[in-house]
Image (cartoon, rainbow, N blue to C red; front, top):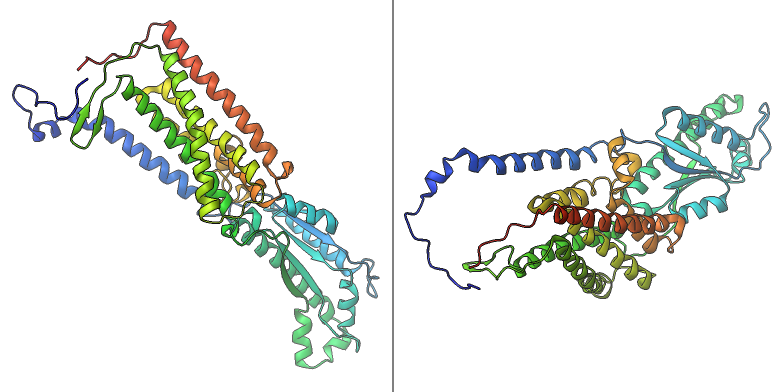
Length: 429
């Protein structure tokens, strides 16, 4: 093994200007860097620019508790007519999927992240609306908007805005009906202004989360930590093992070394890398939780389950990185970057909900790992580790990714070994 500063190569040195004049030296870096810049720009910016314009069937709950008698001349109570109007408007454009349900069901759906918000029509809605045109009017009718910060700040904000708009349309519609009353027409100007928009909209948190949850973003950033730990750790192990076995040089600043080459098959090399990935993921996962929960105080009501899920996530991503690197060689790091980072982040649904991104990202979200890990972490952190809140899907996709990573990696290396496509052996130093 040679180490330290090796002697300069003998012979005439090639000037840098001559090398820069060789177009072949420019070709591969120019093509790859241009493609990466172009694709990353399209992927990242394409998913966030028009969330409202890309809305597709955002799930919202509609709770109608109105039990009042219909007003004179009407067959239905005010709440039922308002609910039917909201449902028909949501169905017509496909942007929102209003789901009528009971208050208890709505609370359960909010607690599992199945709906992003809810609009509640109270039991006395018809009675308070009818009283506005009489001497018995003592309070304005109310509609309640329930938010769900656990689904993410942007998703909760979009849902709140949509439900408030729906409530305002109900208010305007009720006002138009009341304004046609002869009694209201004879009222003073202040009363007529009140009657024109009579309903008060009140906003409440339907499913609260902890104060140390980043307004619903801690799940996304924690899941991102898991993916980065698996991705970066996997590549560090890949490069470190190759250097240790003599298939790559080690350079640290001005120091260069090359170890003697160890004769080993591709398959056995992959076994070594995957075993090291499994071992070091234990340390990585523990340090992530120590930093986020122990030092920074992130809200984590199920730390034991979170650790197990985090370890399996880091391990699965790391095994996937090793498999891709084994199959594609030096190009594998770029391929795994696109698989685990470039395609995964904009399709994760953690910052911008999948219901508010173009269809291509919803397609990616069906299998990209970041989406599945973020859903599992979100369920553990915000939704009491409920299986139907995304935890079941997270476990299933971790298992699928684990099996696919092993199968793909060993299939590639065994194929290369059987064909005699051994790794290029560098000249011993």
